[in-house]
Length: 238
Image (cartoon, rainbow, N blue to C red; front, side):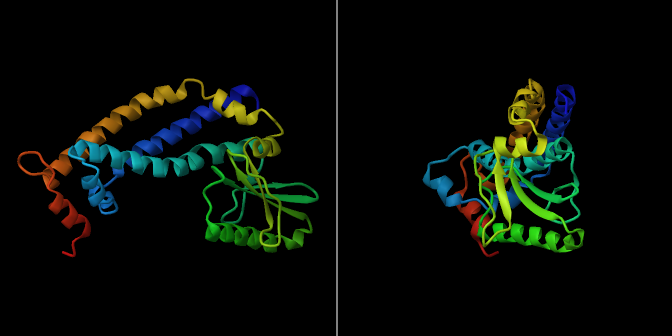
């Protein structure tokens, strides 16, 4: 891709990323998330402000979802377009690049620290399923688990058929450009700052909205937190 095309693609993907972040803020149901938090811990660390609880909850909620959103909205579409590949016909594999002698199957992940042992096994099974479907092609099947940042590198082994490539090595392999991983951050330019203004306003509105809800349902008339009511909601059997 030339620089202008990549810059436009990055801007488009950032727009999608922020649109999804805003949607996450707008669709969060406070009480659903409060059921998963530890009210005893908030009391133990001396929390007295409803807004402090809300801001911590929102921050944890967004941090937990941002990695996945960014991978889906930013890394994956850029990898598909920049690699020149096509959408893979198999679940769990994102991109296929086919030549006369080789079939490169790529699963795109944000970073190298997202897999536990069961997820690794599932990924291996998904590559194996695709390989079985493609046996009639009589081509080398090359399974690649690509991490869009990081430095993990591994080769196939007795327990997995895929290799890992991360960061610069991954982007270089699928684009042929050793500087591509730097261009991704360089060509963001000031786009994040523009989107952050809108996001900040939505964040503040969410803090106000959820703080009012928390005060209404879990605070006493004098403004103090009704800890027993909070714990009863979180852990009671009623």
